[in-house]
Image 1: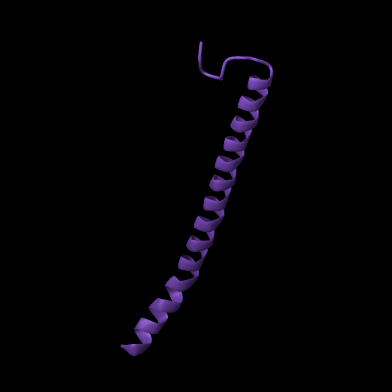
Image 2 (image 1 turned 180 degrees about the horizontal axis):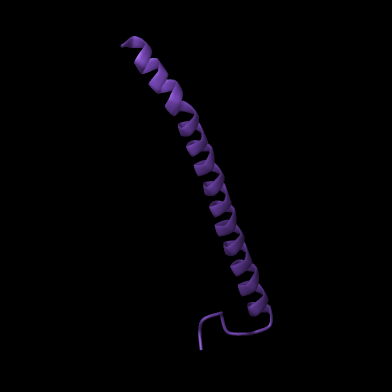
Length: 59
């Protein structure tokens, strides 16, 4: 019975490691995208303010 649990653990470990790596990669991509969008919105609002334009989204 001991050998069965060790085999089960060794069978699941690679899948778990790949799942964690996939999650970390997707998470970093999503965070980078969010940060980039925030920075772009900040730059855009600064440029609109320089030109005396209304903030984006207001009529």
